Length: 88
Picture 1 (spheres, helix red, strand yellow):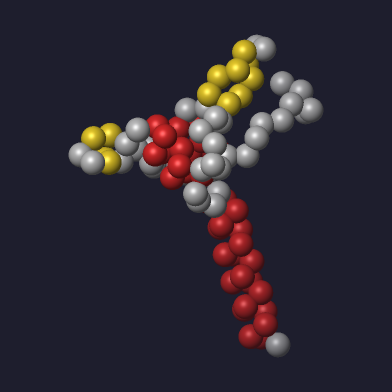
Picture 2 (cartoon, helix red, strand yellow):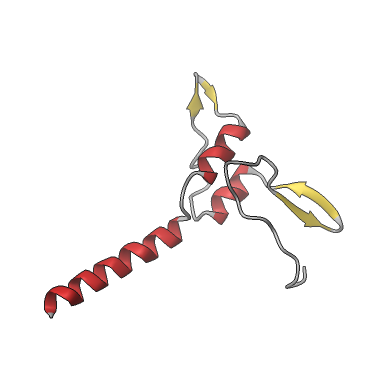
């Protein structure tokens, strides 16, 4: 893999998350997408209408959220800034 190789962002508007491996393109699995978003494996593997959730629903759930590491960073910074503002 080269630094110039790029992968599109994950979102709920497209169901075509893919990676290139040995000049072949393959789709990312829901588990790989969960990992990219900082979620635990199987986080979106829940029941939907009494059956395991289809991949399309899992991709949509993953794409509708914020990456957990990013959310954690924002929350930490808000806490730091609010604490330092109160101290002044």
